[in-house]
Image (cartoon, rainbow, N blue to C red; front, top):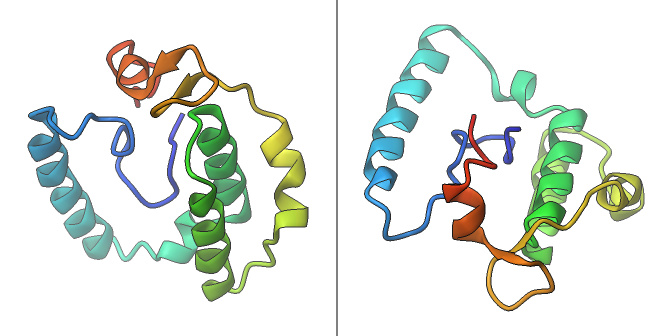
Length: 120
């Protein structure tokens, strides 16, 4: 499962104090260089399906409602017709697996990460 449409896998899940953040930052730099070298355009990665998947994952991890607003804004900049109405089915087809803080889920986000639920 790749949670976000334009980030390295596990980026949203690694706890802030985990030393693997530095490793992920280095990997992100290598990946960006490779994408530029291979002439890969963001528009080929940021598809409607990728945005719908991001909304599902955001719901599953108890993510911020602001994330959906930002995803819609990014999609519109790319010329994709994405709205709250169109995202409704994607949002409702997910199971709530964890909570980032005091939400209704059973596990904390760091439990989700350490259990490898967000592994690439």
